[in-house]
Length: 260
Image (cartoon, rainbow, N blue to C red; front, side, top):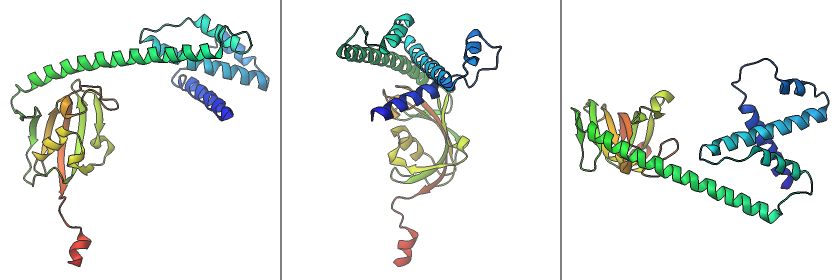
């Protein structure tokens, strides 16, 4: 297990280090590049590659944490790396573990605080958006707070919550950022209507087959404070939804019908 862990860490460092250079354009050799080109033996090339990849991985990680307000002294980090090759470390194994646990806890607290601040700002932004949007001509508001706009009114049946619906849709945030689209994938989506977010369950039931509506879904009818994936907490979601078909939940299967 120890050997596998060492290999995994090395592979991660190499992958992250190399991925950070994918988009870099070729430039004139730097002194560091010239020194690297002078590495001719297998051992020296391997050693330099390991060190460089680890440095890039650590640097990339610390750069992200600096955005949270944590700034570590690179010279002290390098001293710790050097001491790690010897028995002259200034901390015991227990002290190292305690320090790293405290560091992780501090980073997690900062991330949580940042997420809460962002969610609070997103909540206010969403409230303002919905208040103004409700004033637009053609926008209707339901008792739950769901807002919708009819783009195309179909003439088919309307689904029940238990039915399976087939739809095309595009989902965006209030700033226009697109987070999902069956249209871009080139394939409609099918799912039981009562197994999605409440704003979808309510909104799509208003639509006859063949309709295209624009749904403006408050956060409490979407993913709430937690968000989901690239969707931040407390985000208002906007969906353009086209209802293509309905499969009734109580409709017998064709094979069952044939046996009756």
